[in-house]
Length: 295
Image (cartoon, rainbow, N blue to C red):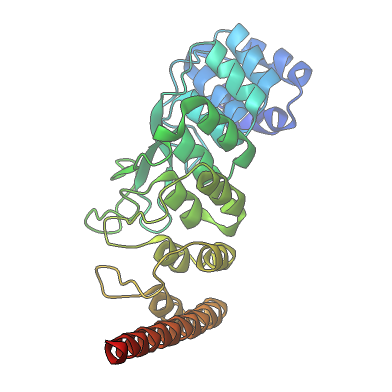
């Protein structure tokens, strides 16, 4: 092991999660300097035994590092959020037993295109990282009042911006975060809907859940939303685009076919409803005429 770079040396051993393999290596590690980096690897990987070992050796669970060597997507975040991102309930419980709190908020990931910092709470973190089982537990413990808290977005001071700062995922609720990330997050989206998350939420640019799913090419989620939620399929964002327009622009043939089918079904259903209303109207007119003749 290289004592000047123990993080790189120990990373594969921490990934295995065997504390007996890691413990002898810590004798040569400066825990004040590298303890936080190693805790990040263990927490984000859901390796409870390694987290416990590192804490016993002096790693500070309340002081996450600013950056971690070799972890390009890492930015400083409370260890509670790192544990939530792992999806491991036992690791989360351990971090909380050492002072972590479910009310913590902070960095949960980089926005998908512009690589801005996305800031949210533990529910948003679980939704973004696809931790559906943990998400159910967190909502149960924190209450439904926390499921629609909007994320914030900040420029990344550690990276060269591709241009002037422009928000990409600002005002994303946990449901929008789940819908944006990937189709793997469908169960998280369903969990949030089960708890009553706002389905009519829009982001800073007027994008609905349908728009966001379309923008990210998440067709399984797009299909679920279009089929099961009462969202206006023809709604336009601030750029005047519908979800169908976005799919067409992005050459998402599957998304286009799906939305065209649902829109056709919607139109037929609307036509049937209009016909029924027209028939009822005629019946009422005939009733009034009959009453007038009797008078």
